[in-house]
Image 1 (tube, rainbow, N blue to C red):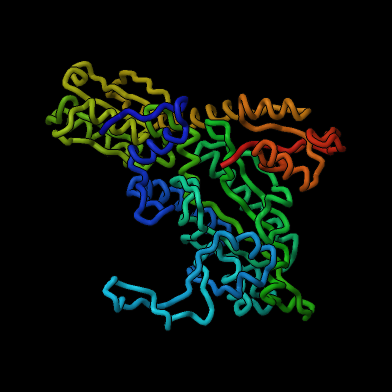
Image 2 (cartoon, rainbow, N blue to C red; image 1 turned 60 degrees about the vertical axis):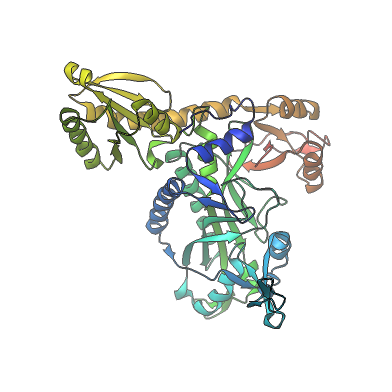
Amino acid sequence: MAKEITPRSVDYSQWYLDIVRKAGLADNSAVRGCMVIKPYGYAIWGKIQGVLDSEFTRTGHVNAYFPLFIPKSFLSREAQHVEGFAKECAVVTHHRLKADPNGGGLIVDPEAKLEEELIVRPTSETIIWSTYKDWIQSYRDLPLLINQWANVVRWEMRTRPFLRTTEFLWQEGHTAHATRDEAVREAQMIHDIYADFTENWMAMPVVKGVKTANERFAGAEDTYTIEALMQDGKSLQAGTSHFLGQNFARAFDVSFLNENNQQELVWATSWGVSTRLIGGLIMTHSDDEGLVLPPKLAPLQVVIIPVPKPDPAINEVAEKLMAELKEKGISVKYDIDEKARPGFKYAEYEMKGVPVRVAIGQRDLEKGQAEVARRDTREKEFVSLEGLGSFVINLLDEIQQNLLLKALRYRQENTREADDFETFKSILDEQGGFISAHWDGTTETELKIKELTRATIRCIPLDQKPEQGKCILTGNPSAGRVLFAKAY
């Protein structure tokens, strides 16, 4: 495996693409804007899915599956929703092909036109709420807590693997509640789950906040977001949880008979994270040598390499170590492939971001030691064979924590305040990162700042402190700072 990748300082976008390709995460597809997720990349998604699914189950949610196709008329029922997604929709108009009478292969059969066009799912609120109308009759049917793991299609002109593709994988939760307060608590609880997951499993710190009216999800009353800072100083929206109010219940006439025998509209939430999280993992931790993965999400956490090749004595030590690690639930591989030299294997596993590498040779056995290398810092040390298993187990925890602390330091060092527009522009142009600044609360000003700088309000932080100030653009009064950044 060729080790060289484009340095981040030379071309950050190419660096990212190099890692996706050379670490074996994804390939381009024959379909424009789509990607093929390779087994190693899908294994990371599988671990993400497993952790989150257990959290959803723990909090009372159940999985279901809804159709990929949505009647066009459904999208039209909620005005903000259709406006928000209209430009991204893929539309099915016919249901049959036929042989070209002129010998040109297959053509669309003009007689197979659908009576109503079908939209390939960009998100599932409309098809799900049309179903909930039949499922919800009484307060006894609430709360309804449904999640689905699915693919969605949003037609994109400019794509990048994992970060923005025409088709991507995600989970989307859709819940119905008897009261406004219960629905708000649900949206906030999921927001907390997402933040906890990204920090404790991905080692990717996030800022928790709410979106402005202009940036919130189409059809929502409030959108809770988690925003992460990537190594190029751009923000990544890593997950969102939406309080939908009664908008979709009203659009699809979903009501229930309350305990006082009165009809009420239900209250709704929706929420989701996607394979975009893999892009976040890459850009938060990786370096110019390749992928860096936090141990908790690494498909392979430890690799053992015999030097220069396996023999009975090395095998015995390796098998004992593997047994000890597997007993603790750690994924480990003993690479006995004799076709590849140790140096090649080192480079391969380094590129793939395997957190810990253990190399064992005859000289090491004579000294009662093994060489242990950690991927996060690329440091190596010799460790006694006695207690090697415990050392590796503790090292995995140390690497996980170190990656989080390193990312936290980066965010802290790249979060700055600006009190006037010139300073704001200077920080954006020369340093990037998060900028905490005053805003007058109007969409007009928000859009003007975006037009002038390409920076957007990533969120109004939940821990925002009341602070009287002046908007950086208009000079109008502001009650607190919001977080700006350029974003993916």
